[in-house]
Image 1 (spheres, rainbow, N blue to C red):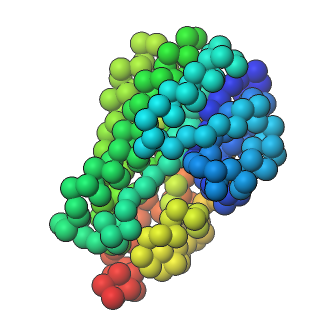
Image 2 (cartoon, rainbow, N blue to C red):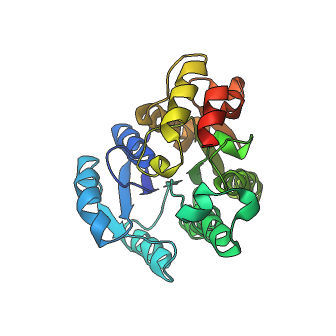
Length: 266
């Protein structure tokens, strides 16, 4: 499905990362991949995973560091000359702002969360579009907290809502270049990043119990959806947030569950 395609995957931290599930699916579908790692400490964890998916490029990328993103895309241009798809799966909020109410969030913390989690996708799209001369696909990762209030999700709710809106605007702007832009919205998945959310274990149990399929989605299932959206078969799908959550989004926010509300209020 992706034979001969070249793609960039941003956001692998370990083998539990959503980005790694996507990378595995891209590679299984025949794509050649470039993978990034956050810093030297992360390098030793990411590089073996990059090897596992046959990545031909392993590059440093901290989106808060000036010039690093430009160097990544310069390397892609030098190495491949073009790009067919990219996967953005990064998010961050300072701990105090993440664990506090939106009402009390700091301007600096909110701005940093928005920059890393949302505007970095805009910058990535800006650079990536220049290499997608024959069209392509851009993907990012959202969460149901963008649509409904989720207790303990804090400022990431408004930030992910901005990300989903950004997907729609980028889809409209890049459509004439035959570039699709979509978000995937998994339900809660036990990744390292998500574990920073207060009472995340309660959220996991609640989501698994109330989802129509009575389980959580896996990173492999998210990866399968991502591989489809990156493929020519999905070229007419753009500006969409695709839920891959065992149906959790159809039953509403976990905040309605008394157990979760009580735990989040502690």
